[in-house]
Amino acid sequence: MWAPGSRREQRHLDQGGPISSETRINERIRVPEVRLVGPNGEQVGIVRIEDALRLAQEADLDLVEVAPQARPPVAKLMDFGKFKYESAQKARESRRNQQLTVIKEQKLRPKIDQHDYETKKGHVSRFLAAGNKVKVTIMFRGREQSRPELGFRLLQKLADDVAELGFVESSPKQDGRNMIMVLAPHKNAKAKSKAAKETESAES
Image (cartoon, rainbow, N blue to C red; front, side):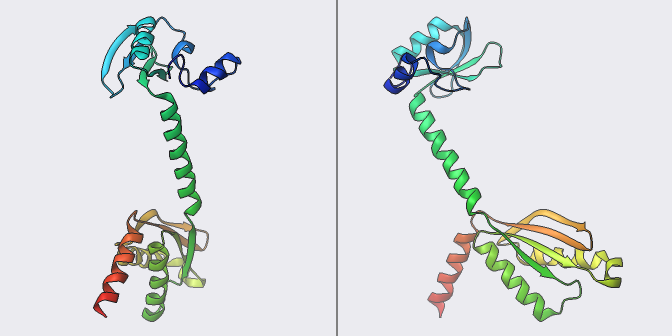
C-alpha cells in the first residue's frame, strides 16, 4: 500500500503525473516537519517528516496532508485509497440528493375560503411527504396589496399546519405584488408519511 499509497498511485508517480491537484501524500509532502494525527484521530504532535513517513510505512498506511496551510502542515495516517473511495461515494450521494430535491409551487389568495385552504394545504402536505420543497406564493390584487399582514398570517398558519412534515426554510418575504415562503421537508418526512398510511390501512 505504502510508498506512496496503492500500486495504482505508485504507477501514477512513476509516470510523473500528480495524484491530485490538492492532496499530497507520502514522499510528495516535502516539508521538514508535520503535525501528525494518528489513524484514529489521536494527536501525535509535531514530528520530522522522516519519522512520520517511517510510522506510515510501519503501519502499512499512507501519510496524507490534510491541512497544507497550517504551520507546520497537518498530516494524518490513513488508507488513502479507501479515503478517496469513501469521499467519492459521499460526493455521488450528495449529488444524487440534490438532483432528487424538487421545488413545487402552491399559490394562494390572501382571502382564501376554508375549503380551498384545506385543499391547498393537502397539496403542500403531499409535496412535503414526497420529499419535495414547496414554494408558497400569496398573490395580492388591488387593495389587498395594502394588507401584507393578511398574507403573512396565512403563510404562518400554513407553516404551523404542516409542521410535522416540513419547516420554514425561507421566511415570508415580499416579492413585488406577491409574498413568498419556502417550506422544506423534514429528513424523515417520507418515513412518517409511509408509517401513517400503513397505520390507516391496518385500522380500516
